[in-house]
Length: 107
Image (cartoon, rainbow, N blue to C red; front, side, top):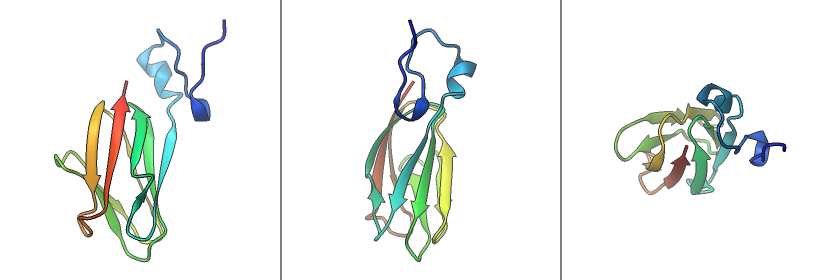
């Protein structure tokens, strides 16, 4: 029987080695436009990469509430991070604290 696939090509089958699962990691895009993260809530897996694509003319950050990471997102640019731990992660922009997002990261 063939394994089941997650959207964008990731494996969701059971019993895979950790090194094999990283080969199936996804890149998830969050758009930054008009001082907002879109979508504001995202589900992801350990090993996935989050990319924030900034359409604004000002820089932003994706900074965790617990200070685990702080990603700079340049104006008209891209910021990225690879997720290394599971859990619910709240983040915000240090320059515009009303900009908030949430990641739900599972194994």
